[in-house]
Amino acid sequence: MRTLRNLVGGVWTPSADPSLLDLVDPATEETVARLPGGSANDVDRAVAAAAAAQPGWRALPVAERVRRIGAYADTVGAHADELARLQCQEMGQPVVLGRSFVEAGAAALRTDAEAALTYPFTTSVAHDGGATEIVRHPLGVAAVITPWNFPVATLLSIIGPLLAAGDTVVVKPSERSPLSAVRLCEMLSLPDGVVNLVLGDARAGAPLAEHPGIGLVHFTGSVPAGRAVGAGAGGRLHRAILELGGKDPVIVDSDVDPVAAAAAVAHGAFLNSGQICTSMERVYVHRDIADRFVDALVEAARGYAHGDGRDASTVLGPLVDRRQRDLVHGHVLDAAAKGASIRTGGEVPAGPGFFYPATVLTGVDDSMAIMTEETFGPVAPVRVVDSFQEGVELASRSRFGLAATVYSGTPDHVTAARAIPAGLLWVNAWQGGGPGRIFEPAGDSGMGAWGAQAAYDAATRPAAIHTAPVQRS
Image: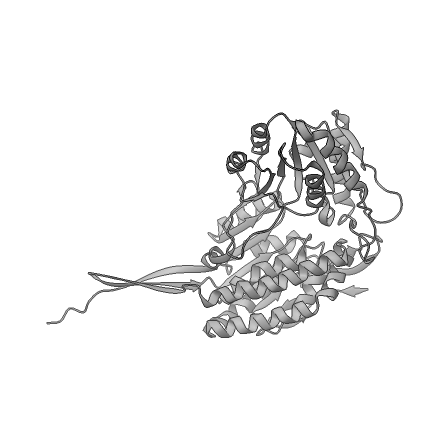
């Protein structure tokens, strides 16, 4: 049985607290590793190591930092299959799917770091009274607290701008998916202390978010945990980037192909077993095509057979643990008790593993948790609407505001959909976006812009230096 350790200043170090957590393979329910529960002492040591390494890292030319980060990205990409298998073992993600996201994460790490070569770290403005120079300094040490659902890709998508800007980092992965984070740190080719790893649950996360030596905390996770992290960071007047939960809507208009739209919605609702912050969790379909759409969605859902993600044919892996499956099934049972129809799925399979079938519900409304609370599972609840505008109104009626998707060929309808309060709006294709994409979640889905130049703005602090003409006698 492997016991995981922290990485502090380049040295693998046991936790100051002897308590351990079990890591269970969600497909087999076997314990595969143990990890520290976490402690404030662990955080103190990691932050100190990051602070000690930061001046030397910052002193390197930007081009050299970018070169070193790019070399690390190459190493990660070369180990994509290994990392995907670790993700499968720790949280159930099918290896085929995981490999593609690891490769995408490595590419994003490289691209995001290369953006530092053109980022305006220094700008000057001349004026009658002299000159003013704006210099953007790194913040120092950044805390990066990552979720369990895409552990590798999420971490890689965050650290590029931070490291390239001259910050050092302390990473705290979810206690539900630490294996891949440990392996990522074993691959490090950066100077000791530039990246540090602290394992554990809230016993590590809370003191990290509140640590006086942190200049920025970047957190991805649930709304309750994000509120706690935000409160802790705010108490220290730290900058915080919070990407939290979602209850993302999709509107299917009357002028689209219902079968093609159903296939797209199935993909958006069931990919990664629905364990995606931007998963399609509320479906609003126009009455004119509703019957054909639902029939096609049910048929598509029945094609998402579940199984162990190490099998190359598996599309639907297990949920991360029993607690998550209980939450998902509870939402389905609540909806059924309040009048919804279970068109397919909705039953807990027999046998080991935390599997749950692709499920389609109809007859849903906002009295049901399945339409108002984040489910984070392979469930597609469908509500029929009489007009596209009704779909927009219902889609906008949520405390969440992460993303939304619209399928429509009517320009006026697409324009109307821009009113949905969300950080991301996808039209006629779920996911996607150019390399310069910047977004900020709305409502309870978080705060703080990230992506492209916004990420570098968040990773640095601007200082204005005004130089007046010399007064000569």
